[in-house]
Length: 450
Ligand code: ADP
Image 1 (cartoon, rainbow, N blue to C red):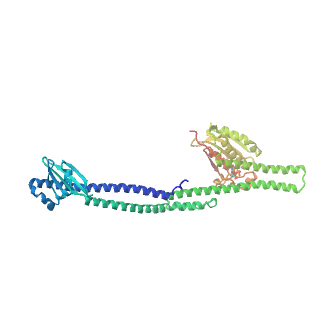
Image 2 (cartoon, rainbow, N blue to C red):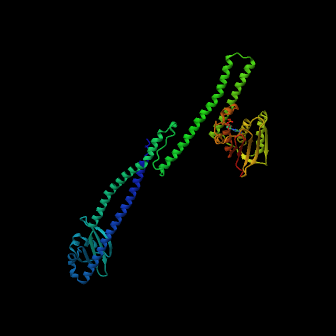
């Protein structure tokens, strides 16, 4: 069975406890070594002084050696000459050190454990004709060291316990905004995308995270809104021709008609079916554009050729309305783009120009370069123009300046949205210059060839 992964709070506390334990152990060990070294250093200094005193007394007044204990507190020493014991104190004799150190020469300070378990610091100094060895009991220093060990051994785990408990509490407090965010996020569904995560302090890490999530929620909210509107608009647009087909059919069924009458009915039904087909085609194009399924190819396209091609395709519509349609090209203007997608965009612009320009109007298409040298195609007409108030919004889906008028001409308000996508997919933009009743000029501006 796999162990459940630890919570961030527990992991933080464990890490905190681990690092703290390591630091405290290293620090305590350092302290112990330092205190032990300084304690023994003091003892060694005391031992050296005692040896010097013994040496001096032995030289100057050897008979006073026995008074050293009472006068200077030097109770443990011996003097040997050529391996023979010359003098030893009572205490020294009791410890039985004489036997062990009779033949010793100079000896650095070292610890020695007596048979009774006591510890002594022992040192010997050899002179040319004799050797002095002395000892001092270590117990008091060892006791102090031991007390320190006990203090550290009991105090450190206690302090560590406190620190870990404090760490656990603090980790809980620090992480509490995450819990609050998770609780809120759990409540947010597609229907409550207007709700936001709580932002404690917008400047700290969790605050910034919550702000980023909130911004994402805002974007999702907008997208959902757009999608809802799009679905509602699309359903509405689809319902209109369907209702028309239905009512034409119902009316036709109510009275018997001759074959001419039925032909008319079928004709108007087909017109509505045509409108439906165009609408579904446009919706499909936009859905594909949204899903990013369309991958534009990149090739060098001569814009005048593309413009001429589109103009020829739609010329028949212009002729039906007795409009003049001209294609001009200042010089050879080339752009790197996907010709099929750009053609779709230009087709929509020209189709609109023909659609909205009255009988006998004029439409000009120009392949040219902008002042900054970017390749562009302009579609200019002498139509009704677009009022400034609508210019911002006409590229939105299903937006029509005059829905009644546009419906008559078959528009669902998707043409410019498709044109804008087609141009943007090629890295370009559409500019509009228009004034009411003074015609419109749509300019496709493409990126320069590097
Ligand atoms: P539609 O299918 O209704 O033509 P579009 O997205 O192509 O939809 O255009 C949006 C609106 O912009 C149209 O309803 C129309 O009012 C306005 N429009 C577009 N092109 C022109 C133009 N050349 N002249 C005047 N109005 C235009």
